[in-house]
Length: 476
Ligand code: AMP
Ligand code: ZN
Image 1 (spheres, helix red, strand yellow):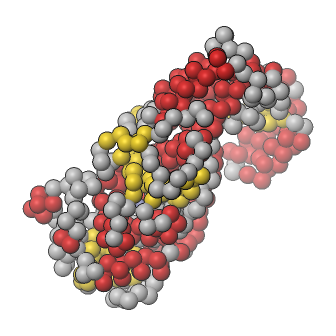
Image 2 (cartoon, helix red, strand yellow; image 1 turned 90 degrees about the horizontal axis):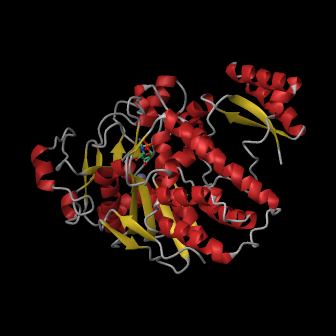
Image 3 (cartoon, protein in one colour; image 1 turned 45 degrees about the horizontal axis):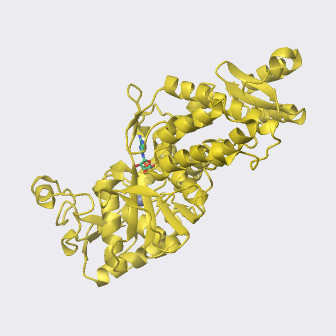
């Protein structure tokens, strides 16, 4: 076993702490997933990338991991303060289609993009709209404890009943009370939050359900508490999300869960990913200029280049996005894949013919960096060294890179050499087929584009996107 004891930065304790599973040999992870009313941006994908690396590391260390990430398809309001429209409802009305269709469309985009970025499939992917009963039950438990109050707008959590409310995010509630605005009539403290929102008496919502308090819909925060508990138990190991969730969403998740379940701590370690910053280019979904995985593909960039790019920054640092940055990550990735494929083919894929005296120090370094609060930039530097270290035999190199790919997720075992001769350049017929496919894609004729891909595949050729456009390469 090369993976040493895993340490992670826990937002709650504000320290790097050892990972100590609640159940020996097992690890449960919950990650706040997408609100499926609009595209999931490359920024959103960074918040899914961190748990993918963490999950793969835990698996490589021998843990049996359960990874749950939810689909928010109801209840996420435009403002965190429980005011404004429901994001799903707003989008569905604007397009004149059902909320379920909006959700299905963007859920598919997110799931496809996760795959294109080399992420493992979630073990459980619960949707909020399919767990209304669980959410109502949790609100009822809080109500029975006297921690809620009912106003015209809905059922609210009374933060004064949970003295530890401010601890998680180090909030100053007195200051918030003095300066915070309370726009909802009857709400007692600016930090009080909706558990169940009632539909306005004079209108019908696209998504609404019966409840003990009247027809309405769940507040956003309660879904994560209810679904995480259902699939991972009343206490679990790791909860992740973006840093923007610390102050409100996760603070509220902790309050609801620790009160209703009578546990502390509800979650052992909270892992928060910093933002991907777009500098000049807007990343916000509402800005209309949306940067998604397809944007990269349109630029001729392999989505895995973006995965490599994400490895280059530590998850607790902001990372600045640029197309050029992702392009050079792609160049570095192609070098690594080239060396890996050459080594793999030289030893017919054997991973156990290495010389441990030469490989073990590299294994210790690579896994040591990842176990040290997911230091991916340092781990990646080890990968680059291994790819080109002339002292290593092909057997050594392939043994190491195949091992590291458990976390890298670059698919090295099946990869073709990206620097191999380009078959399309030599054969005018293949070049013509590629040009037809490019034209079909431009005309959004996906069926024709897929047909051409299948024709080439039948001839043992694979289409690879390069900075100079698509080329066909022979599968090795
Ligand atoms: P949403 O679909 O808006 O609920 O966001 C899904 C996840 O993406 C949340 O965990 C957010 O914290 C995270 N997120 C949103 N924008 C960014 C960004 N620019 N960089 C990293 N994570 C983000
Ligand atoms: Zn959540």
